[in-house]
Image (cartoon, rainbow, N blue to C red; front, side, top):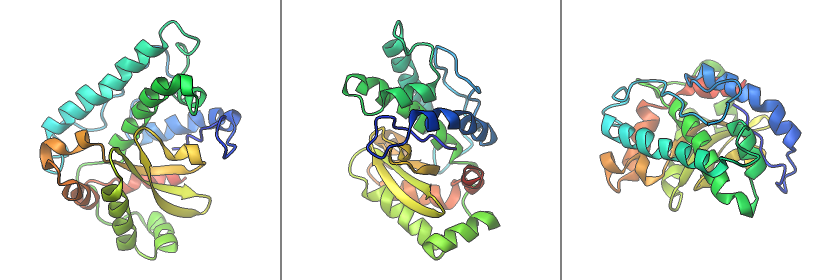
Length: 238
């Protein structure tokens, strides 16, 4: 699921590279269970969840999904549509809005809401009922080449998710032939550094606080053990 951003980035990823990969992003999104259209029309729509509200319980409750998806994710969609209404961004797809707003001080609010829509859609497909367990063989081979073992990756992913100060995201990414774990703050995403996201864990408090209060580590470890969607990561790896 590629979304190389940053026509404005010092890393030098071009807008042409970004736009050229947008269809690939949405193709993989569909494979992961999202219902994003191949080219989003204005207004930006809230994509359907790839599973029912209670499907991730007891790790993530229907109550949390109701607020997280129905209030927070939907709120980003509503905010973005309000922010771009009547502007030259109003008829652009979500991915193009992220691309053209990234790194621009006068479009910070637009970027934050657009990126959070994308991040959340990616997060939902990074989870599945009865997930976790052993990765598919092809992905496991790549994990072992980069981290030594699946357990080592899980430990590094959990450390990134629990050590992110404040709101943000932990990611498994591809950097060329190598897999890495990184974390980003607030609405930022790996593509601003030219990295390819494979899966993500949301560590904003609204992702876990109703179920776990301040016990972020319990949420992260349970998610990795029981919900992580290794098949989605393999699809994104290509």
